[in-house]
Length: 298
Image (cartoon, rainbow, N blue to C red):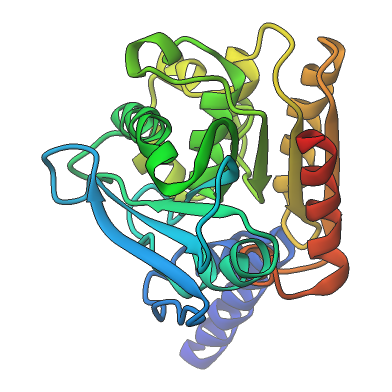
């Protein structure tokens, strides 16, 4: 009898695991928690200014990747790493390596990659103001690097995409941090564009750590709910291997489009990590993003 009971328990456990896998939850959990990652290897034809401070905290620093030859009025990619609002680093390989080779070395852009304080010491609402502060400081300094403060493109992956979507959705932080409106924003596989909807459905525990159970807080950190007027051109890449990313991105872009915003949804059959890692390496995917950038820089 004991053996039969144990057998039933095993069958039930297997069934539960299969359900989780089918829902994409375990897969997403694994990809969201890849906190250990190699540092980027940067081509010798790129100049690096590292660990420039935008505040007094240890995490308030950014790196600037520049073309080897001096430039003037170069467009700037402002890159915000992901990591479930808990981990990640500005110099991770998937965050900068291929993007720097593709846009800085080959096309003359400047790329700035930032760090910012994270959970558990810094709630997501404060992470948002940290990212806004970094953007304002970078725009104020970029002329000395040959950059154009009026040609800044926001880019972020995962949690970083959520944070830049908040900045792209509303100008509420612009005057406080001296931000000039960026010319475009690119979101790399965020599943958090409509935060209340996400939190009201089955979701990963990492979202509870980030957003808690206060519904007003959810709405205050929901790009879709902060979006109330026409914005800069917006592009969202979403993994078709995840359950929430494409529906969330589509809802957000549909609302933006209703205000007259130029939008582009790019579904990709890549993993959450590869959407970040392979940008600048996989030719077809990278060209879609590059063509979008060319269209907004005209």
